[in-house]
Image (cartoon, rainbow, N blue to C red; front, side, top):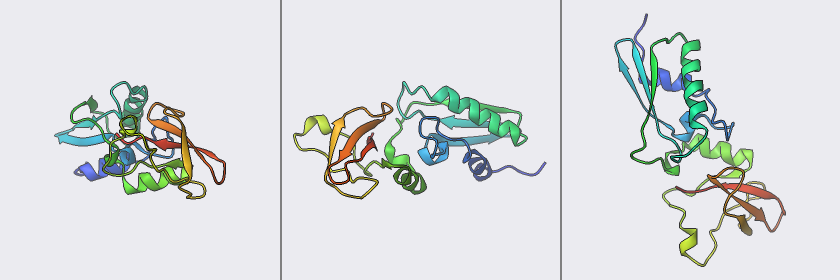
Length: 163
């Protein structure tokens, strides 16, 4: 058997989709924090997008199944909560895929502090790129997204919250 690298394992895991946002891989989400290789043992370290994320069990099962399909038998998945996941860990490819899917990607380097300030966050519409939008619900199709509506094209869309 040839030497396995972290990069090779990351590449294999790019096919594991986020169950809540299937256009994103867990690699694009930044959920896979690290991969430890020790002799014939592979340890995949993951961090949930938030501590109560219901998708993490499915993600763990999919990671194990994908690696097994690729010939790796001695695999374990370890969940770590610190440091906490942040939307800054999304890859550029992931941000582009969100946009193409119709979800406004989160702004880089910010935390959503909407409740602390009276002015609304400016979120560009992923359909027409207008910034003439309005949040209509703090919670969208999942807890990690808010629901917005474009005032120009009138389309509703999700915004991936900054964490």
